[in-house]
Amino acid sequence: MSKETCDDFLMGCMTEICHPPAEYRLDKSTTAHHPKSQQFKVKQLMQSFLDKATPMFIDLFRIKCCNKSRQRRNLAKLVQEWEGLQLEVWDF
Image (tube, rainbow, N blue to C red; front, side, top):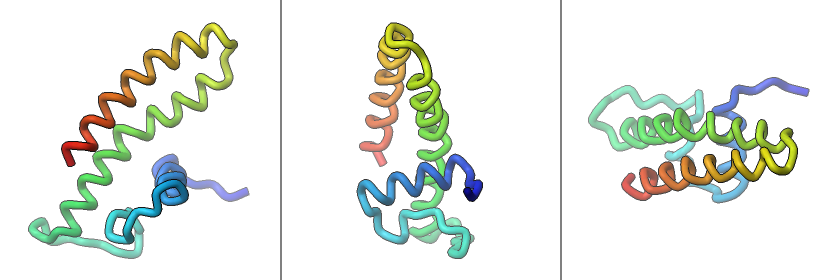
């Protein structure tokens, strides 16, 4: 079993679900250093998204380990966080 970071795991899940174009993926091999380039801006937005989504994604797995009443209570809170993240993503 290989070890990967939470960001890599989340990006892999997103890739499987929605198949984003290559310029949206945060590959370690491709680097965009020039701040005015479009690819640099996209990578910054994607990194910002991952910084916000990764803790929520981890919380989802933690919640699934709880009993049903605690799951329902915690999922209600998490859904509100996901809704806020979705609104931010739509603004991208």
